[in-house]
Length: 134
Image 1 (cartoon, one colour):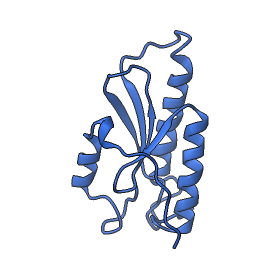
Image 2 (cartoon, rainbow, N blue to C red):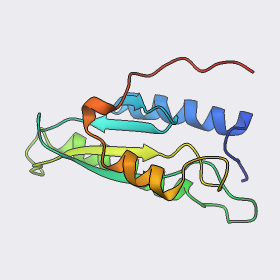
Image 3 (cartoon, one colour):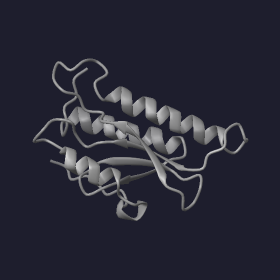
């Protein structure tokens, strides 16, 4: 129930989430801060609509602190991606689900960093890179 940023449990959650995204057609990228972006490009050149939160949790913050926002957003993106080719829905933007690298002050993203990351262009996001083992 508790999975603080930069712990082994957080790393396992992030690894699982990447596999979940890829299995549903997303391309996964990381930025320099370690935020995970699951990109679903349906309309080349169109902007991205971003949803998400963080998979890590705050101590005593509740069972679904952060994780619900990531998983609900990812589920909606996956369903829209599934429905788009059949004409069930018409999309004019691309989709992005984000798992911010952390939620606790001093451990991860500040509000300024979040705003910067949310306004990046697709070209500013880097390819996935291997994690260093500690």
